[in-house]
Image (cartoon, rainbow, N blue to C red; front, side):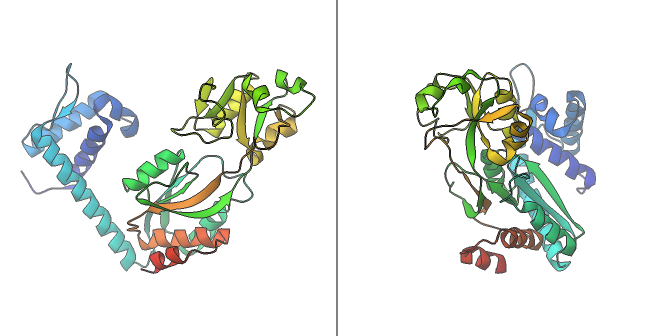
Length: 312
């Protein structure tokens, strides 16, 4: 094989995406390529390496023995490339580089969330640093943090996961909502758990119970989602009752399209949001600077552990 060059690097990146996705078809979305183009590039890589990396056909996709070895050393190669980039950024005093930031959806209207202020402060000082932002649900942010695909996350976890560190930032108030035409509004008194459970409910589609209603019944929901946007659509359909952040639901309440239910005490809840990082915290100088900006913007106290980590 000839000395490795840019083409090989690009093809190896493609190979890792295919392997992680479990096949050519599954990798199309992430690569934004047609399956035929992916297949051609994989053939090019196998020709350049002089070995077969994967089996594909009716029996499905699988890596060969050589492919497994190339997969592992490719992951190690890109880890070292990432480390090299971080060290170069350090040498440049954080004047350039990139940060991968993961956020949960629909935080911009929460008055307690000051992520935008943190980004503004950071960018005024480090104008050449790229901030690549992804919107995921909490579980996917946590997964990407553990896999080192994201540097910093803002999450609202069901429970703290091993391998991650969480630092409280803010909270948000969540209430039950329905459409303005929903029959539950005919109740004269405060809606009880039984009143709500007599109607279809859209709830958080997570692995564990989160909301007060999800803890009230294990055989309840007609719909589940991790997206606030999807929850709003389900509620506005006039069929479902569901939880939304008060700040997010306000626009439909003001339009008269959605109503906050008058419920008995205990049916509302207030989830917390956390700055979340990998426990190993091998952050670049740029990422550490953004962490500092986020902490400062939210006026977080009792973060001595984080301060030591940033200074290291």
